[in-house]
View 1: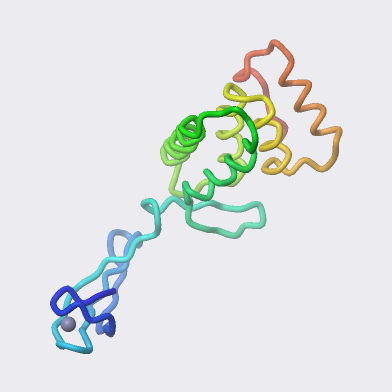
View 2 (view 1 turned 30 degrees about the vertical axis):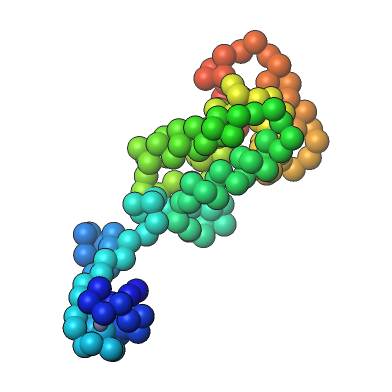
Amino acid sequence: MRCPYCEAVETKVVDSRVTDGGAAIRRRRECLHCELRFTTFERTEDGGLVVVKRSGGRQAFQREKLLSGLRRAAKNRPLDPAALEAVAVSVEEHVRARGPLVPTDEIGRAVLERLRELDEVTYLRFASVYMGFEDATDFAREAGLLNKATAPKERRRRG
Ligand SMILES: [Zn+2]
């Protein structure tokens, strides 16, 4: 964090307090060079959307990370990169409406709903990785469901 007055890089924190209902930390800093003080606010990335993993671990939601997963799944598929970005944005909007804590599976389902309409191969690749299929049977079942005429929204996912 550069000093806004002299642009020196070295500063020290002289006061630190939680603010905004725990969503941010306000820090009072002093420049080690010119000794002037300034305030910074530290927030979790992307407005505090937190992904809760199956293990119970938590991490900040990162659209870029989701997008790179989508790109991996869509590798060598004739898809417009903008379409994948649109999926990521749409998923983020979806989970943000339910946030701030979002289970991994909720994100996975939101992604799959959108990929199903976009590209079958990408959908299955993503499903195999993110839904954590244990064996080929699960995978085949999902593939079978994909081919059924059932409207996606009528389908009930186990669990
Ligand atoms: Zn300074």
